Amino acid sequence: MSAKTIQKHLYNIDFYINEFLLYQEATDAKDGAGSVDLFLGYWFIRKALWASQTSIRGNAASLKKFYTFMHEKGLIEDDDLANLKETIKRGMPEWLATLERFDDPFIDDVWEM
Image (cartoon, rainbow, N blue to C red):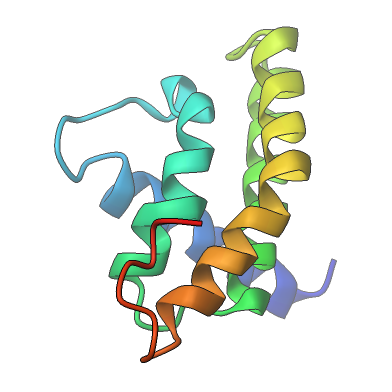
C-alpha cells in the first residue's frame, strides 16, 4: 500500500474508534465489529459532512482491514470477522441508497424506504 492509502485507512479507523465508538457509550474497538451497520448505514451519513459513496466504500475497506488485523492478533473471533464482512457485503447497496436519499432535498423521510 502507498503511504497515502495507509494514512487514509488510519484516518478512517481513528474516526470510527474515537468518534463513533465513543459517541454515546464507550465501546472497545474489539467489541465494535458488530456496529458497522449502524455506523455506515446511519451514523456516518448523518455526522460526517464528507459522507459520499467513495467515503462509505473507503470506510468499509478500512474496517475490513482493521478487523482482519484484530482477528490475526486473536482479539476477535472468526464469527465476528465473518459477520462483519457479510454485513458490509449485504449492507453496502442500502447504505449507498440511504446516502442518496439523505442528499436529496425533496425527500422528507430519508430513513424510510
